[in-house]
Structure formats: C-alpha cells, structure tokens
Amino acid sequence: MDESNPAKYGGTPVREEVLGYGSQSITEHEKEAVVEALDGDYITRGPTVEAFEQRVADFVGVKHAIATTSGTTALHLTGRAAGFSTGDEVITTPLTFASTAHAATYCGATPVFADIDPYRRTLDPDTVREQITDETEGLIPMHYAGHPADIQGLMEIADEHDLTVIWDACHGFGGTWDGESLGSNRDMAIFSFHPVKNITTGEGGMVVTDDDELAQRLRRLRSFDMDYEPDGHKSEPWYQVTEGVGYNYNVTDMQAALGLAQLDRIEELKNRRDEIIARYNEAFADIAGLRTPPTPENADPMYHLYAVEVREEFGCDREAFVNAMHEENIGVQVHYVPLHYHPFFQEEFGYEKGMFPETERVYDGLVSLPLHPEMSDDDVQDVIKAVQQLRTYHA
Ligand SMILES: Cc1ncc(COP(=O)(O)O)c(C=O)c1O
Image 1 (tube, helix red, strand yellow):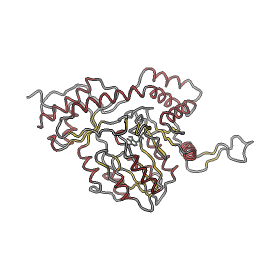
Image 2: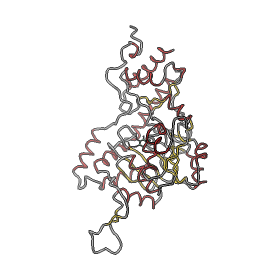
Image 3: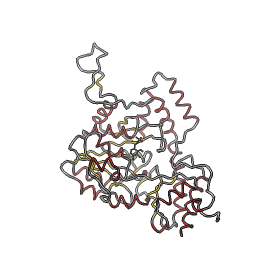
Image 4: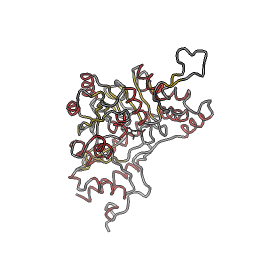
C-alpha cells in the first residue's frame, strides 16, 4: 500500500478530525454580549435590534436596514415589498440557493432563469436581456461566493426596463465593488447571517435599502402588517389593526447582540478569509484541471466560499473528487445543484436539464473547499496536501 496515495486509494487520511467546509467563529466576548442581552427589558425585537440595524445600515452605506429571521425571510419580504404578484416574471440565476427564486414564487410570480457568465458564475447581462418580456418586473442577481455580479451591466438593464432589483448578497457581506459596499445599489439587497456566512447571528437576515417607502413597507410586513397607530383612534391605545397579510419575522435582541459583536470583528474575519484564499490561490495555481475562483476587478470581496471547478485535465471527475476529500476527513460542498434541476421548478415552471449550458458546465465541476476564519494554518495545509495528492495520483 502506498502511504502517499489519497485515502480513497489506500493511503492514510491527511487528518483525523473532520474539517467542515464552513463554520461560525464566536469569541467569549460575543457569548457575553448575548448573555447580557438576556438581562435586558426585551428579549424579542428591542433596542439591540435597532442598534444592529443602524450599524449595518452605516456599514453598508444605506439609509435603512431591516433585520429579519433569515436570508430566506428577507427575500420573501423584498418580493412582497416590490409588489411581485401572479403573472409577473422575475429574472434570476439558476446557480443559487432556492430561496433566491422564492422571492418571486412566494408572491405567486414566476422565476425566470437566465444563464450565468461562467467566469464570474453570476447572471450574464446578455442572457438576462434575452429573457425580458412585457411581464418582467424584477431582477434578482446573486453575488456568487461573494464575487460581485456584473453590477454595472445589470443596472443598465434594470434602468432601461424599469425593473425592481433585489441583490441577493447573502454571500457577500463585508465586500465592496467600485469602492461601495455590496448591497448599496438600488433597490434592495439582502444578507444572511447563517453560521457559515461572513458574520452570524445564529439564524438571521437583513434587508437594506435607500428607499424610505420600501423600508416602511418592509418593516410593516415583518411585523404582521400591523398599523399600531391607525388614524381616528388616538384615545384608544389598544387599537392596532392588520392591514394585510404580514408575518412574524422579528429577530431577538440576543441575536442582534451577537451580530453587533461580530461586526466589531469584521475586519479580522475578512483578513483571515483573505489569508486562506491567498494560500489556496498560490498552491493551486499550477494544478492542471483545477479552476480557481475569478480574480476580483475593481472590487474587494469578502469571500464566503472558495469554489473551484474540477475539470477533465485533473484526472478525476467532481464526484470522485468530493468523495476522495471526504475520505481525507475534509468537508467539501457543492454550491449549488442548479435550480432548474430541482423537481419543484421543473414541475411548477417546466424547467429541465439542458436549458442553461454555462450553468451546467460550471456546476459539473464545482466544489467548495473549506473556508472559514477558524481554520488554522495546519488546516489550510491539510486541504492543499489532499488536493495535491489527489492530482498526483491521477496525473
Ligand atoms: C445565495 C443565498 N440566498 C439565500 C440564502 C438563504 O439564507 P438563509 O439560510 O439565511 O435563509 C442562502 C443561504 O444559504 C444563500 O446562500
């Protein structure tokens, strides 16, 4: 048995403990902040949530931030606030998480997929143009892995056709494009604070916008679509009425306390991600058949994922690559099975495999390698070693 072989082919795993592809990073100070919030007057949405919203708004450089329970519920609120409804078409990428498209489907609108630019792995403005009809009302680009979509190209289309744009920036919190934060473009952007994302609140999300009316609508929908001070009832302080179908997407002060403390560390968290990415880029530059992530142009992304593409020259396919890494005790993941492969989108909207060739070609090789601030230098080296061993074996 050759010990230098990958574990899948008879060697010893590069590590004994499983390394996750993503993980939260929580300090003692952050834990204390959560406990302190529990002693406050509010343990539901209270002043700490308001402070967190203000900090995020200032950080992103927008007027309003509305905290919600997840990226998914943030997307739901944006679809409702945009007024999407039955008969409307909303263009988005098939290379994303299902919730992106659900900003349309939750509201009865139709998600219309357009193919990606395979370099950025984000919506290609040329394919978006091909999908525009009289029914098109919105556009939901996603900043895949944290790399900015073609913001300029997509904004031009939105301007020409008067579309509402919702940026799914779940992967990109903390990054900038053209000197401005991802999420600061019109009309709305959303973030997720799930544990593997760039900062976390356990579960959580945020909508950001510069538009006063949208902000008001978003806040109302988040909390039952309730008018707490309806006209003509000044002397009846209990008189609070629902004006539509709203939700309870309120987050708690404990979550916000964690979010605020995480924001204090955003630079440190970004720097560690950048260091790991630099080491990967250097180590993988000469590996045949391994496409590394796109190089940022006019941008300083805070990458959520380090997604490579395993191509034929590597010597094995993506499935073999993923299973080989798992046998090395290295967690890898695939982001994402394209949405037009999912039974829901096929059965509901008639999508099928073969419709989006660039997405499919990219997907066939995609693998996200571990990337999170808690990774030690040895962890990073284990990932590099496992990839190098696998390539050597297949060369
Ligand atoms: C691109 C994208 N959009 C939306 C979501 C949904 O976010 P959440 O898990 O916070 O609901 C995710 C999270 O996985 C995501 O990656």
